[in-house]
Length: 369
Ligand SMILES: *Cc1c(COP(=O)(O)O)cnc(C)c1O
Image (cartoon, rainbow, N blue to C red; front, side, top):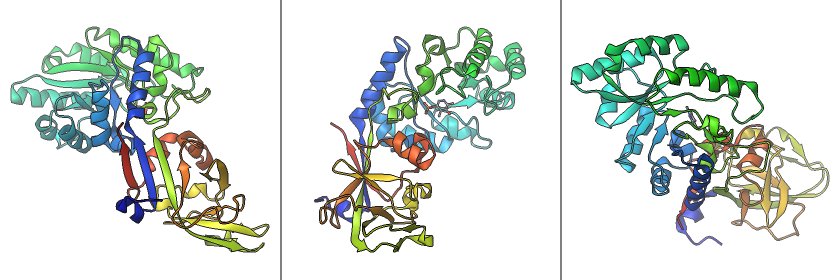
């Protein structure tokens, strides 16, 4: 039974295990050997709360942080006053002064961005820190070889910028046998040879498990810190971080042939018992889980019944002894029996999307010891 009054008013309880995140950080450090490990906190720390998770990771030893957007960097800066924060999305036009003001380091993704940062440096009469990103094969962000070469030859620009990092991003690191991993590694090695004195970083969570060749001078994990399996072909080396419990609003018995939910998409084959849960797609409980997702109660797996609606979802609890589940009770959506990777598989997506979709309406509990 819930006693916390905020929890009594919420449809779902989301418990985030900070020591598990810290243990995952240490596990990744162990994999990296002597190579330091940054932490990626984009999208509000993968939905878990960047301003809470950031300081926990700093306590665990992280000294370099990455977010996607300058807005995210500004918020994180207040929680972490004294660490380098890199902005993966680059140097947003018109926001350059905000980077300076909040001590944010752009990951410069094009020669145009490098030139704009260098011009600001000349105007301020200071060298300005930044990372440069090479496009080693993902064709998403970063400079092609031609721009990297042009930059290497432009001493005037380089003299205005303090290069803190050269980096690139792997497209297929979660598939160790994929040929593109080697190709991207070789492309990145060619680029970094032009800047031999600048620390280099290539590996995201899965990249860290590709071995030493991929480690360079800095690991750059996100998802694995938060309990997503970085080695999908094998058992996860990471500890689960989130538990999501959904509240039962109502329990009913229905006769065979009766439908549940919008579109009458589920029809009971036999006399059944249905529990209505207080979470829906507005909470990031993806509608694609309709009729294919599961919840757990006391070690028993229970199938969803009917379409997930905005605020509620139906659960077939016929497998439970009658009366064992009552309004106000909680069932596990994410927990010891079913982690983010399993729920993602049920929804036809990846753990990343499950985490970053986690709703704002859940009552959040941060476990800190
Ligand atoms: C998101 C991101 C990461 C972290 O990736 P994970 O797979 O979550 O570990 C690292 N580098 C870049 C450039 C990213 O965009």
